[in-house]
Length: 343
Ligand code: 5AD
Ligand code: FES
Image (cartoon, rainbow, N blue to C red; front, top):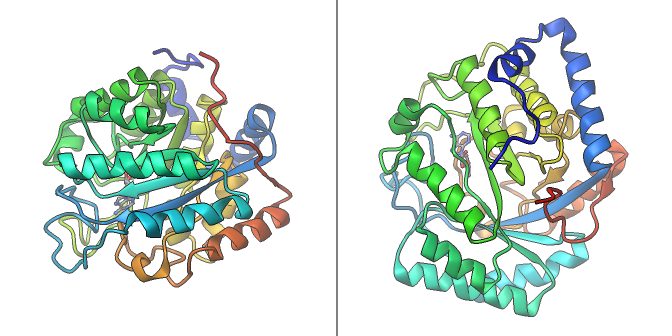
């Protein structure tokens, strides 16, 4: 794996330290890099949060296993298929199936079967986002037709990673990304911006790792403290300068010119009224992930508070985003929206 844009961490750091008065120019540069490398198309990847059952205890996450306030659910295969079949008419060419980390032989088989069914019964590209697994399981899913996988490394600092994740090490997480690459999946990863304890040096390294892993897709979003987690009451590292969230995306784009970068949902939690994601689309992002989870389950998949679109139903976000793209002067991406990387 190699860096597609040999930028040193200290160069990245300089960009991250862009003074507020010069940030509009940084955002414009990121937007230009996005336009030149990815065009004006915005790829729509509809996400179904098909299960919130999770065995892990990630310190930041609202659906962590010890949170007994959460009503646990798992959608049936037919429920998932029903949504999947409607996606092409909404302009969505990729389905993202996300869940908590429930690693059992049975669950892994169920996931493989649903991937195979979606590939057989629809034209969708399939992305999974279900956590850490062995290379064998990833290979099995790839054989079932999985095109891509999303697994954020969350932070590049091994100690901070361990504090946040009692269930695994940074090295194990990074090994998962290598395994995914080995089995031929397109690899998406990313991190949270501003977890407590993050420094600008760590943020710079986060961005550089994305480059080193030559990621096909990079999703980043602000850390938001959840009241029912050990990080309740903590503050985002950039809470007094929330424009840093956008600076992070802009620098990410400049350093990773041809990666798919989504405008992630957490931005709308911090900047409501769809302001956050609209701005990210104008400061480097070229992907949007409409929430396709049926309304009955949305309120039970709150990784962080103030998650947007919780009162909307399947299909609502798909229409909403079409209107928003129109206003932003952007087009809906056509074709499967595979990686732009030439390997
Ligand atoms: N704040 C922001 N992002 C969060 N995620 C989970 N919990 C939070 C939180 N409290 C993000 C993680 C994970 C993704 C699915 O959601 O980065 O990888
Ligand atoms: Fe969900 Fe607008 S994107 S309502």
